[in-house]
Image (cartoon, rainbow, N blue to C red; front, side, top):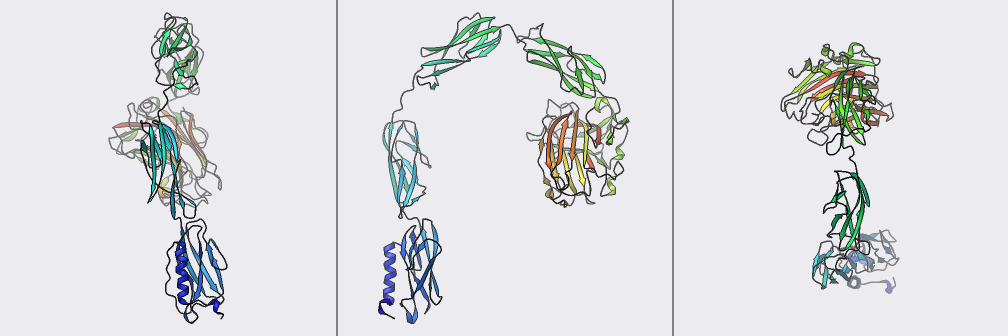
Length: 634
């Protein structure tokens, strides 16, 4: 082998040390077995973008012999002679040498940002007293790359946050902002100047520019003071005056009061500048409408004459005003143009009298026929108005130790109904569990032939919480189920319950559909109320707070509708009406996937308060109907 290709062991060591010194880095070479291929240096820390020369030699008898090497790297750039250049990334590289016989050796190189300078921007700045200015910092590595840094800031003449937001103090002068990272620092000069004095008023604008209001009523005007550039000024003193106090007066806040019909101007003055608005005072307008009697009760088909009294803001009765009569629910009560109300069907509806945008109303109660279940309508699966004792037809009736029982005089329109009573802290006040259609267990005892696979049902109940009721809805009210096996596993549940009693939703009914199958229709639940295997399909929130203090003490017609999805589709529906008005709806539901063994086959009517009742109080049920078609209200 020619001598120019041979390296002594000592010369190879000197080459390694010389390379390390030139790079300003640290390296180490471990022992190499005789005859092995070795890369020098074999470990090294360098800066990003730095270039390093690598050598490959052998140990043993051929130590120092020149050999043909193929160089490779898992990043950066390496030449055929072993000259390696790192890229801009902070990372670890593997440098590999391979000779003609297939021997390989690897060096591990770590590239980092070796910070050489911290830069603070802006380098100089001017700011007025009390003003703010955002400073930024970055570092420069030895390779010249910009590097993100997290400096410690300090400042004179003001204060600076840890993120570099500087707030000038009240003393003018030149001050410093300093950013420090380790042993490196940079400084910016900040000149603080006195803030210019606030501009004075140039114009005064009164809004609105004109107003018409009634005698003995008030109207609020506003004044906007602006400088010569049109900027709104704050903290300005404004004086108000009226050109004719016999028509209208105005106080120091711009509140004008009508004294007598006529026209005048009100003026706002500030700093010698003024603006005005035109005022027209007119005869008193309608301020209130009162309807009497306020809460009449009539039988279905009978009438009651309502009267409207119109008053101004001072309480004086006004005559000769036009009055319009309307019913909030013409399915319960109709009313003609003279205020004669006629009962159409059982229920409660507001009848309003409106004059000049003001309205008053009466709450009209219509008493239905005594027994709704005397003649069943088409599509009805079950009806119970409790005038007869049908409790044995429910496959489960929980009387709660006598707290939930048929009681005369507590039902709708004074009929027989179910009374549920809670003591303080009591959870369950009884329930009625009704089964219908095809069932997985004979225990359920359906009220029909027990063969139908119902894909869609409607169920309606009348519910009333006693006057003075407190605590919200008390959680569970009614639910429909698809019972799927003898373990009472549920393939779908359509919950109608109140929000959490202690929360903001406690006074409203919610619908809360859930699926107990997967998308393919495989049953996931294994038993009753297996919440861990239910998929909740999204709540719908009611609109009427029927459990708050202003709404308890009256009957509500609550009707729900559940329609199961077509197999393989998400076209299920769950919706809720109160007093025939749609409260909430959820559509596009996948209740069952492709499950079809059973349909909707049970409906529960419940009085279960999860946390226990907050008081000793009563709830009433009446006129329960389950149907394949819309039921509606009495």
